[in-house]
Length: 42
Image (cartoon, rainbow, N blue to C red):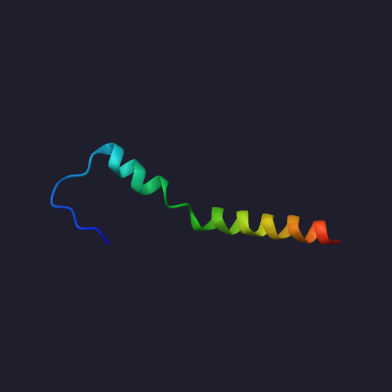
């Protein structure tokens, strides 16, 4: 966890929040990957 003693710029805020994917998006990506892997094995 970082502690800042100055205000963050818009670019810094964008970099922080774009690096963290939405949990549901990660879940759907994982499910899609599992479906692809399963489909290949069958």
